Amino acid sequence: MNSYTINLNSVLELTDEQFFRLCRSNPDLKFERSVQGELVIMPPTGGETGRRNLKIAQQLGIWTDQDGTGVAFDSSTCFRLPNGADRSPDAAWIQQQRWDSLTPDQKERIPPICPDFVIELMSPSDSLLATQTQMQEYRDNGVKLGWLLNRREQQVEIYRPDQPVETLQKPGSLSGEALLPGFVLNLAAIWQ
Image (cartoon, rainbow, N blue to C red; front, side, top):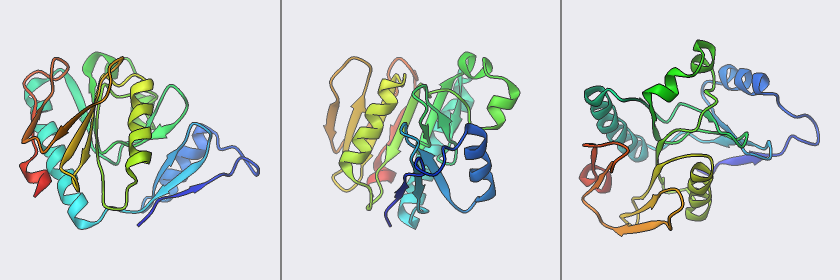
């Protein structure tokens, strides 16, 4: 299934509060909002993508609990990026001190913060170019490490600030590098 983009700007511009209420009023739909204010409606994932997303979130969540230096999030969390876009990566992590700098209300709603680390797992209907553009948007807004997992090609693109994108073919695992020391994502369950 494809996502749909609706440009409402000629009719109305959704405020942050209206966007939040729209998301809350439609819990069966997943919304994002582009920097241009376009509303992006994404279909639910299929079973295989959902299964793999859970494997990613499990691994990141277990490491986060053991490490204690940050907070992990699943794909249902939407973040307001500095450029004004509202995005929901498949998995994300934020350093504890940055998370703690938000107010309780900001934490409960759509947090106005760019994650330090994001993972996007392409589903069969995702466009590689669109997903690469989204990864670049994350990097431009402050992500320190981003992984784009293309399960069809068993390929990973690694996004770091001020560096060219690194592409790996069929890696068995990925290291969280200096940002997430000791975190290793086992890709065997993702590729199968």
